[in-house]
Image (cartoon, rainbow, N blue to C red; front, side, top):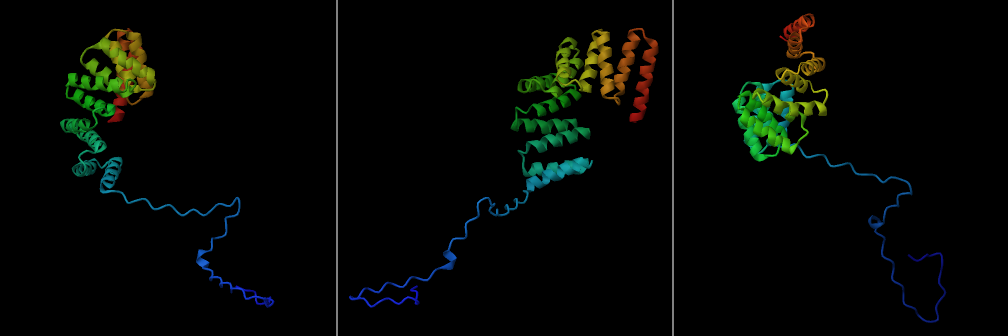
Length: 258
């Protein structure tokens, strides 16, 4: 706008009248710049989307399992699998719960369907092998474990399970290799030490058997079979006093577990 405090002198020749400036749109005026060093305000993040039905069922089944509500968890996993038949983790977890309830065949069936979806899952192969072994289907169990080892040659659980399957098949020399490898990879694996003791005892390597059983008993003081193994080997080594103490300890632990 023209400042009315300044009056222009009369021109000798008429000049075109300047156009009046347009009014300022205050909404279009840029905001004052953020001072140097200041942090501009960050809008809050958008809230996460609500869980899907599938996610809710899986979370509920996990909570029920953690709470020891096995029957309810089985029911929830079945509902989830009906909704999402390709949910591999649900099938694996359901299989483990069915095994706990004694439904070994049902558990094997769930794992078989899960492995059709993920054939290279070493953990599930190991789980199915353990259940096949329970059913004395040792050849099939060995196949699963050999396949799992090709996928993960340093999987301690798979190595231990393979050693156990070979032990049950009386292939004792073959059983030594995976069990020795298992305790090399994980020196505190009590189960591997125990079965290593079993193999050494059967092939008459008594000092090695004694060491393996003693390690297993130390790592897992609730394993009464480990103490019994110690006693059996000491009996074979003609150390009756120490053997009697080990057998007594085995009985005490067995009673405590009841």
